[in-house]
Amino acid sequence: MAADPRLATERVVEVLTQAQGLGFLGPGPVEAHLGHSLGFAHAIAAVRRRQLGEQDRVADLGPGGGVPGLVLAAAFPGSRFTLVEGSTRRAEFLAAAVRALGWGSRVSVLPLRAEVAGRDRRWRNRHSVVVARSFGPPSVTAECGAPLLELGGVLVVSEPPGGGGERWLPERLRTLGLGRPIATGGFVTLIQEVLCPERYPRRVGVPRKRPLF
Figure 1 (tube, rainbow, N blue to C red):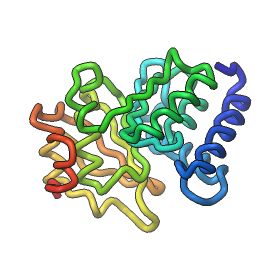
Figure 2 (figure 1 turned 90 degrees about the horizontal axis):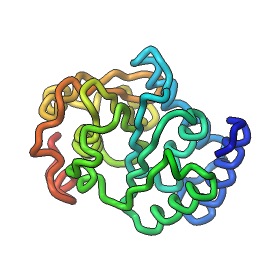
Figure 3 (figure 1 turned 180 degrees about the horizontal axis):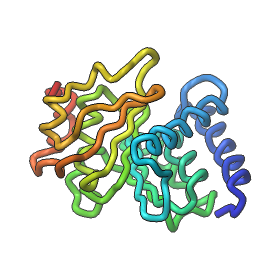
Figure 4 (figure 1 turned 60 degrees about the horizontal axis):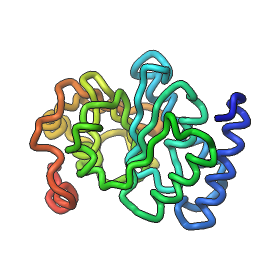
């Protein structure tokens, strides 16, 4: 792992550039993706009143080519990260990137659907933070993210342009143990007020086919 955070970020930019060439990252300047990923850190700090640290374990739902997970891993070298990626090709790319960056001791790649990871005791209720960027509709993201969170953990989701949290229905979020949505700077943050009930997440594909809201 690079000792200099700036060097680590430069190396992540190289990874993101490769990812974009493979179609694993959306269009636009890589620097814009980098900046947006760092926005997750600001949203987390705004709710928790502190930045990510050594006590934090962060799960990234569907990071694709590495955002925001790898960017946050470069910015916060004391935290541990779990990259949950259901696409085999993307998961293989991420695993190779983690090895090349020398982060194997603190960044894990799970080549699993989020519904599967959320029912596995190795990862269920084990994370203080879950982040999601373009993972899916609010109901799918909430159902797949909540089971991974510990009590008091936070789910941070990037909202589309103009979004202010209206898509998130508090009464349905309570079904998953999540509190009211907090909109801040293009992100929505939800606190895990009660551990997610054992019946969630439902089996693979069901959250999208039969959304909770």
